[in-house]
Image (cartoon, rainbow, N blue to C red; front, side, top):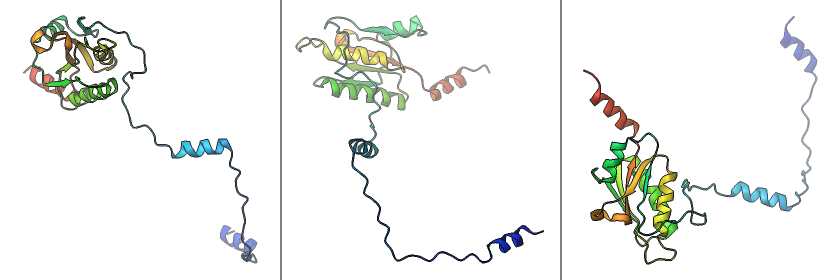
Length: 191
C-alpha cells in the first residue's frame, strides 16, 4: 500500500476555494495608554552609554583639598605600591581635568582608562586639581577618588609627588592586559 496513492484518492476531488471580490475590513485597534507606552518603548533607542561610573546626582564622600588620595587593591605587592607612591614608574598617559564639569570629567576618566587598557598602558596620571577655589571644595578630586575605586582594572592610585601636581593629581596603576602577561611569561620562562 502506497501512502501517496492513498492520499491522492482521499483528496482527488478537492477544488481550491474561489476568491471573493470582497475587501476585508479590520476594526481599528483602540489606542489605549498601555498601547502608546509599548509603542514608545519599542521604538526608543537603547542607551549606548556604557559608563558605569557614579554620576553627579549620586552621593559621594567629599575629601578635603589638601588630603592625599591613596588606594590599593588586595593582592598588589607593597613594593609595587611603594614605587607608584614615589613616582618611580614612567607615566605613559596623562589626563587633565581642569575646567571640566563633573559630567565631562566622568566621561573623560572613563574614556581615559578605556584607552589606557586598549593600548596596554599600565601607568598614567590624572590631574584633577585641588579644588580650593570651588564650591563645594575638592569636588572633582572627590569624584576622581570615587570613580577610580569603581573601575575593576584600577589596581592602585596615589596622590602625585609635588613636581607632578602633588595632591592635585594621582598616579594610577592598571592591570596588565593578557597580551602583556603572555609577553612576561615568554620572557621569564625557564630555558
